[in-house]
Structures are given as C-alpha cells and as structure tokens.
Image 1 (cartoon, one colour):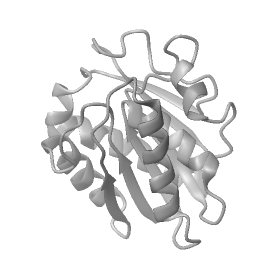
Image 2 (image 1 turned 90 degrees about the horizontal axis):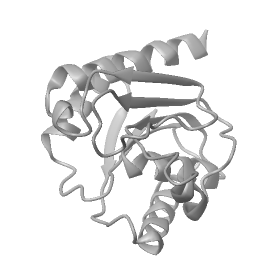
Image 3 (image 1 turned 120 degrees about the vertical axis):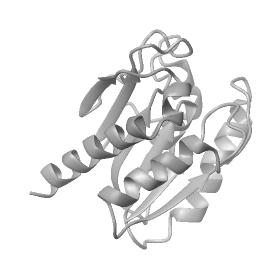
Length: 179
C-alpha cells in the first residue's frame, strides 16, 4: 500500500516536523507501506491551483499499482476526497482527513473542488479539540468514523504523540475493515 500525504494551505515544506512525525508513526503501524508527501504552496482562494494540484496527484498515482491510503492535512483532506473520486485505475483503501474544513460555508470548498458528496471508500476524519483555524468542526457529512483529539490545528502535530495517536486509530480501523 502507498500512503500519500497531501499538504494543506500555507504548508511550507513536506519535510516539516509534522510530516516527519506522521511518516514515522504510519511506518510503525504500516511497516510494508511506502509513504509519500505531495506538496504545493497555495492560498485558500486559489481554487484553480488546488484543482491543478489534485489533478497532478491523480496523474501521478492513477497507475493501477498498489492501493492508496490518502492522508490529507487541513485543506489537503478536502483535496484527498477530490483525488479519491477522480482515480480510475488505482484503488483507494481509506481516506484520512486531519483537521480539514469540509463544512466551511456549507461545504463550499468541497463543492468548488469537486469532492464527491458520498465517498465510496471509508473516510476517517479527525478534528482538533482546540482548533482555532477550523473552529466550526471538521466532520464531513458522510465520514465512516470521526474522532476528536486533544490537539490544536498545527502546533500539537509537532509533537510525536499526536501523530502516533492518529496512526494508531487509522491502523485499528484498517485491521477491522480487513477482517
């Protein structure tokens, strides 16, 4: 399985401590998987740039090879749903969204980016209890499971235990879906 991390708005580096902690934690729970981070610096009003970024990810990974687990942080979670709905050859095992603005302005971003109304694969969403960026909540209407964790939008992800908790929950759900 390939785990593909998708960065959010204003993310400056796929090599940040946040992504390194997520990669290390997912490697422990999914030892036979490979982990990639797709990165593009974009702003929230650059819808065309976000669509192009999603199309780039689809073009890169829609090869019919190993299945994908899409891991989107912040706006990257909305993009992950768009990517999953656009893949034709490659199977998506799970979509994981971390602190993503699915419900902002009546799902405006999801609609503008073409994210599907109903996800055909399991969608695990995480909400930060102390999120001052996505303060209205980050549960999409049709998530399979939604978790509220004791975190802020960004700073808590700089601590390894938050990434570890997310990876643990995803792995537990993955094992449950396989049995």
